Image 1: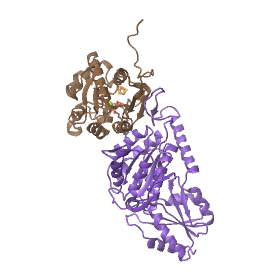
Image 2 (image 1 turned 180 degrees about the vertical axis):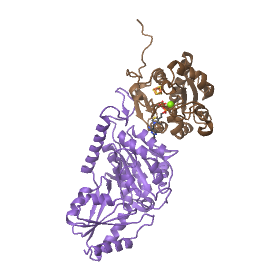
Image 3 (image 1 turned 45 degrees about the vertical axis):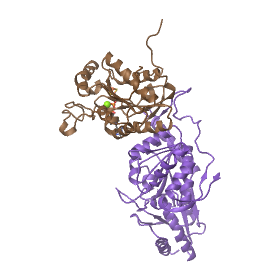
Image 4 (image 1 turned 120 degrees about the vertical axis):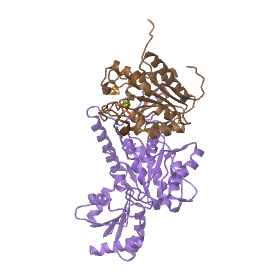
Length: 358
Length: 250
Ligand SMILES: Cc1ncc(C[n+]2csc(CCOP(=O)(O)OP(=O)(O)O)c2C)c(N)n1
Ligand code: SF4
Ligand SMILES: [Mg+2]
């Protein structure tokens, strides 16, 4: 953290917008959708003052492609949306991956499928971490769980996007977007990826022309490109996994949860600890790359895991794949937009604890 | 000896992959000539679309971004918002612009985005092997209208130039052809005007070029050229439908 600013009281959506501008993102393209409208509204109000530009697109298909055209010039750019809009962007995500362009997209997810509802959900986990568009690609997926983290990870999102020339998705939900919390904004030292990158599209002045393409027709080129992308994803897993590991050292039961659910789980775990149960939390902050290594190591000592999500169990398979085969994995999920209370989660934790006679 | 004809500087020396008699090559050249005319090569960014012209970057000696099918106008809008002093153009086929990308081009035009759109209308999906396009003429056979386009089922060929001319945003909306030397000369002039509009910051300029696809029309290059005059121009009349005030210095 380089330059802390005055503490403010702000909605999560505003925290993201503020962070983006302070990170040097001066171009935003987007289309309205609840529950993230404060992001475009903040951008529309504040970007002119920094010499930037807000543009309301005619659709999310247009926003993601405007983002692509702007990202190709090397500036920091962002768009945001929710469920249906993010679905429309999937072709664009795939092109970002193929073209290796950096940018940030925020999904303040809402319930689905279909028009669904506007309440909090985590039903877009698969779409975020397993692809969603066509082809063999990944996004960097960040899952904040507080207002401050929304701010911090938005800045991190730009840095990771540039480091790997990838799209970074910040995955939040209606609770995180709407909740008002005290936030300490800050300005990072680096607010640009730099003008010296050899792929920037700026006009071929005094240098050979450049191209941004994802079309590889020559013999072997496509396969080579795909292996190159995989190499980046492997580097991400090696160097940039982020995870919160809390109270796991002596834990007999470890809860795995991300985003707003993880926050509620924390209160439930405090209650469980007070009642004498040895319960810990693993909170993946990067959903891709997933903290496989940490879970694998934990599974050597602790044999019982509980995954809690606001969906029907999408993260469960990643947890199971990461753990040794002799671990049990229970699941608690609420896919309908009703948010579990700390008491709900406490009940589930203690039921799981006694079920396995811990 | 004085050289009287040479490759425009804005073109590379790579031989075109287009089929014999295809007009894409002529249109490429006219665009490159316009860039040379205003000395724009080093500040131009081309946006390639998906169609037979996807290899724009092989033939133009300028920076090129390849857009997803239909999205070139949105990509160009994003680029131009950042690089306001550069020249940004898209080059799109009729499937790309008038079917899957209709929304993007209409809204770029309506916003008056200061870009230039070159729209190559050959009344067919060339790259994918001759399927019906929104511009396919009534009765025209294609691989997906094997009995001829039927207006009761498929609607009528879409007139993008007329549609876009109805909007407030564009500075120039024109339809040209390159089937005769005379028409090539006129097209050259209009394409120049389109880039001049952008240079002067007058906003969205659009040139539709009626174009051949001898391969998928199943015609010789000469027959295809004749078809432009006999069938396409009568339905898609040539001319400039909209032009913001600009002194005609060209
Ligand atoms: C989303 C998507 N749908 C379909 C295609 C397949 N496709 C490639 S080019 C093309 C049509 C090209 O026709 P046109 O734009 O008229 O260009 P031409 O080749 O005739 O110059 C289609 C349908 C694609 N690449 N992407
Ligand atoms: S298929 Fe048609 S449009 Fe494509 S290069 Fe051949 S003649 Fe031209
Ligand atoms: Mg065509």
